[in-house]
Length: 508
Ligand SMILES: Nc1nc2c(ncn2[C@@H]2O[C@@H]3COP(=O)(O)O[C@H]4[C@@H](O)[C@H](n5cnc6c(=O)[nH]c(N)nc65)O[C@@H]4COP(=O)(O)O[C@H]3[C@H]2O)c(=O)[nH]1
Image (cartoon, rainbow, N blue to C red; front, side, top):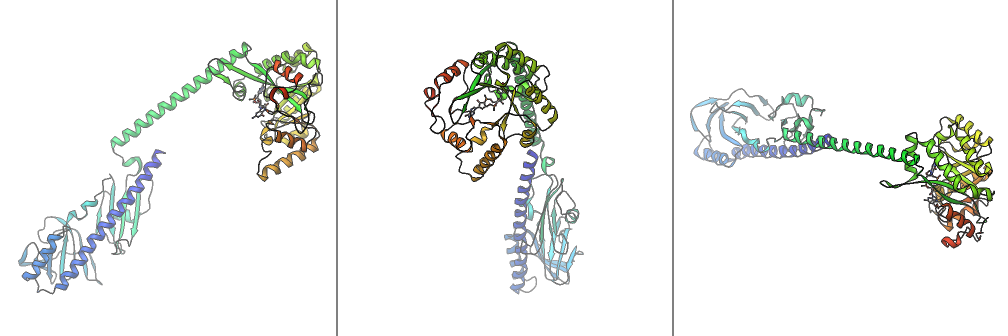
């Protein structure tokens, strides 16, 4: 990520650098072409005092030049700095000549007058300009490894600066992982191309302080990640220990949520839901500790504790009211637990109620191991227990499950119930499809998560025999509250109505 940001900022900086080189080049080129035409236009006699005066005025006002000279027969005969020469100086061989325009160029050649400095020179048949070596100093790159190249459209390079052979950059002008290259042609008004490059993009080009800062930041981040992972691991470890202890001490407790027949408002059963309160972690949500138990192989114990507690609390009620059922949640691991059925039988026989009053909820979480699940379900059914398909509509293989698993109840996930009243047409289409499917299946259907009267009415209008569960009727509660709820009817508890105009009737 940080590398990408560095590369992005490298690109932006190179773009700005290209603009600066383009601007300086335009200025130098327009100065030179103005001077050529101004001196030509002046029509003074060659090397006269008037011409020398004019050349000096130009020289002093243009810092890009070190001298302006007058030529005759390819020899220098006077210059703004040196005046009339005692004897003419022949011009060196140019690096490049353009026959058509009559211009010559010398790149990095010894100054034709003094022979000391390496300069760039440009001339036509009459005038020679010596370009100051510092003409481009204002755009010398600050970045390590950055340079520029000015090239004409016939491939000649009048000026270049930077650590890499300019020919090499022009030949391979594509950017690569170790070189960023930007090239633009025709933007200076003189037809030349400006190429800028960074031969050390990304972290390669950063100075030691920058790299040190990056290393320190990475180190601090690694340490933070390490500490977070360690503390997460410690948290998991201490949670694992706490859950084990809670299971050993049977501190997991059970609450019950009533299941209501929508058309009569009668309570027909209840679902047992596990709860865990820990002095340090607080009230841990069941989704969390159930998953945690699954991941840590604690599921067989958790399921046994919940079943024992739920039957222990609700057993008498079930014996006295044979029309009531108790829903218990099972995980996939429980289905393949060979001793679980015997444990359930034992708990049930202690309280002497019918096997069919127990409904075991299973959730489709994976399409794998399907045959094994089918066999386990058959074992439960053969002992008289009932099976409920929980969270219907959210699993992997609803229809194939329905055709093979001997489920006597389907619990429609609350996400569907919550679509009721939604203005989206896709939601009402989905609901229509669910109701048609359920109508064909002819099994008992429970709508989970009914929270409003509107939802209760809608379900009842589409499915006369539907059962419902949700906060509209009651939230999960203790067994004492449940008994009171059943005997009084929920109207007196929450002051809410049953579906349509149905009145709730006290049970038992
Ligand atoms: N928003 C909304 N929620 C409603 C409403 N009515 C009921 N609920 C919640 O919906 C969940 C229904 O249980 P579930 O689908 O079996 O889903 C359960 C079940 O899969 C799992 N679970 C709970 N107890 C046990 C257990 O003893 N064993 C196993 N294996 N899983 C359990 O944890 C899940 C969550 O349990 P809870 O948090 O108790 O959440 C419960 C219940 O409190 C409503 O109107 N609106």
